[in-house]
Image (cartoon, rainbow, N blue to C red; front, side):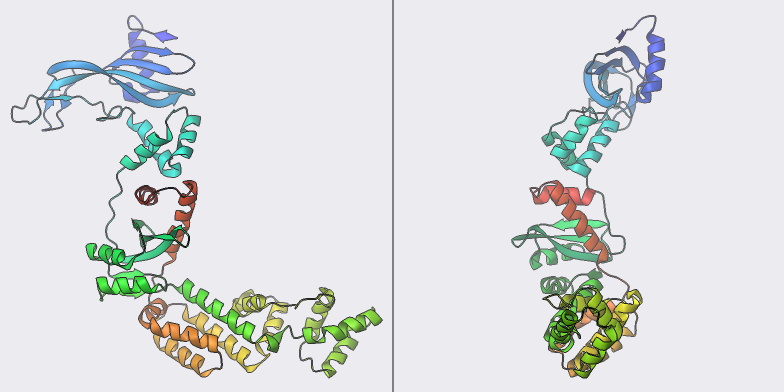
Length: 454
């Protein structure tokens, strides 16, 4: 179908103006369609005055005309191409450095662009979300044919947003090739906004970045010694704040080692009597639990009847492995008390009473949990916690306390100040998704562009 100039020109202009409002100020000459495309031929109006990009003075003094081929968003599942005849105008300002300039149609054309701003915005959104090959495939579904290279070129031309240097920054590393190559992400610890991506995790790189951004006064980090040293070298007055999740994670790992070292004290409380229980159940499958309880009590069992009932009902008498693993015991000891069921609470109490060291361990876990809620008094409480830990016969927990002492300033800031590195860890999670999206093949420049634009 083709609409041409003539008697129907005015109707054509009105109809196209309603469908594509960006063409409302133009003279539409022809609209032709075929199964593949919609082609619109249009002219800019002769009486329109345009501002010179050099000096801003308007002009309608025509030098010449030429045709621009501009792609637009699809209509009815078919891509749109606009053949737009534009004017080259003389600048009427004698002092302007430009002699001539080409008129631009607002919302339709831009310098050096062969796509309308609306289409370019769509391509940029797809490029930011999916990058190269995946972005090209999605654009094909949207009836826009672009190669993966074109999508990447569009992505790399996009300007990065202007972001102010944060007063409170978060810093963390992430793997480019796990165990071999790493990069560093820097965020605004208050808003979670990604500020920059550094090409490695070397201390000199971090130091240089901080010196180039002197507005940073607080840095949230994990327990990395290299980051700590880099921050100190950049500016010793910067307050370093550790991460509460990493403190808790380190404590949980230490508890697992302590629990394993005291396995002989708690495993599983019923396991030492498993052979007797198995023999009695084989001899008399209907033997009452009360009889079994009385028999193992005489042998030294100190647990509850409820524990024995669950042990039997869950089939642990016939099992060849321990009922509880050190990891499960660690989970019970480090779980919030309010989240334990009645059975778990009973087992928790029995485990913590298995030996004096397990009792002290449970108390120290509970006390440290309370320290993870930031409060100005936590500095003194941390000193008390470290002293009690060193006095207890818990070598692994003692080592954990020594680690806290070595990074004491950052740990105290973690327990007393409101900031944390959680938003930076969240940014790292997003980065892992973006890396997988690009099959891990993005160089630093492309990866930085994608991370900062997402």
